[in-house]
Length: 156
Length: 156
DNA sequence: ACCAGTGAGTAGGAAATTCAAACTCACAAT
DNA sequence: ATTGTGAGTTTGAATTTCCTACTCACTGGT
Image (tube, rainbow over all chains, first blue to last red; front, side, top):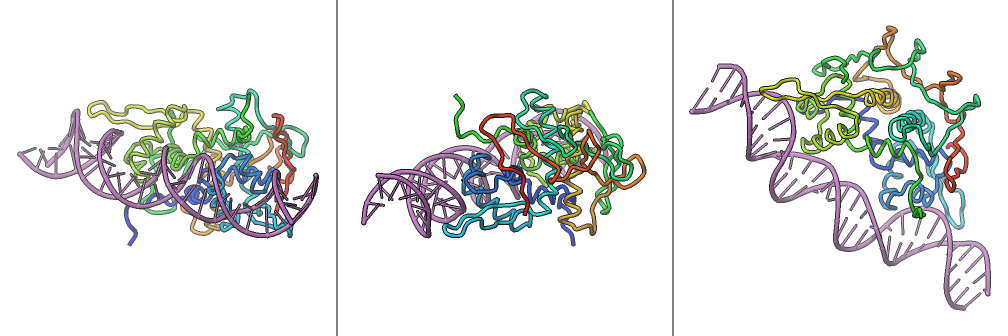
C-alpha cells in the first residue's frame, strides 16, 4: 500500500533530487566550460572542498560526470561531463537566459555564449512537434497517476 | 578592491541563488499547475511547513510569486506565478524532459504535458537566431569579465 | 639534501538549516 | 460544544554546511 502522504511523482523532482543540491549545477557549468579539476572547481564555484568532494562523488555515481586521470605520477584527476551531463547544458543555458533578463536585467552580463551559427546564443524552448515557443498559456498538464489531478493553469 | 577569492560571476549562479534552494522549483511547478494553496503545496511537494513558508516568502519577495486573497472571512490565500515566474516554466519543462529520459528512462512517466498544437510536449532548446537545437559542441563561451577565462569545451 | 609549492582531497568542530510534530488562531459546520 | 480547515508558527532534535587546518604524493628550485 502506498503511503498517502508521498509527494507528487514527478520527473522534475527526480531530476532535482540528483542535480538540485547546492553547487551541483555549478559544477556542471564549470565542467562544460572545460574547468574540470578539483582546485579550479573550488575557486570558480566557491564551494567548501568537502562539500564539493561529496557532490562530485554523487554526480559520478549518477552517471553525469566521469573522473579521468590526466596525469599518472603525480596522480591527478579531471572531471568531465558524460552525454547525460551534456544534455543538461540546455537547462543551464535557459537558466542563464532567465538570470540575464530577470536578475541582471540585461546589463553587465558576465558571460556571452556564441552559437555555431555565429550569433550570441539566446536560447528559446520550443515544442518539438510544431516548433512554437513554449509558453505557459499553451500548456496543459495531464497527470498519468490516479490521485494527482491538477486544478488547471493559472497566472497572476 | 575585489576579493580575489570570489566565485565566477554568473547569471546561472544568480538564478540558482534565488530559485535553487530545495523545494523552490517544486513550488513553482505546483503553482504553474494551479495548485497555489499552502496545504496543497505541503501535500504535493512533501516539504515541511516551516520551510515552505520561508520559501514562499522568498519567492514573493523576489517577484516570482504573488500572494493573493481568495477568501476574506475566513482569510485564505493562494500563491500565483508572476510573469517572471511563468518564464521559468520552460526551465522546468526542460528539466522534466531530462528526468523523463535519463532517470525514468521513458517508462511510466508520471505526467504528460500537451502543447496547444495538439501533441505531447517535447521541449527542445533552440538558438533564437538560427533555430538550431542547442548542443554542447555548438557552443563557445566568452567571459566578459577579466580573470575568468575558460579552458575550452570538453566532454567525456 | 632541504624547502616551498601544487593537486586532490580528508578531518574536526562550530554554525546554520532542516525536519517532524505539535501548537495557534480565526473562522465554519454539525 | 465539539470537530474541522487553512495557513501558518514554535520547539527541539537531527542533519548539513562551513571553515580551517591537515595529509599525502609528488615536483622543482637552491
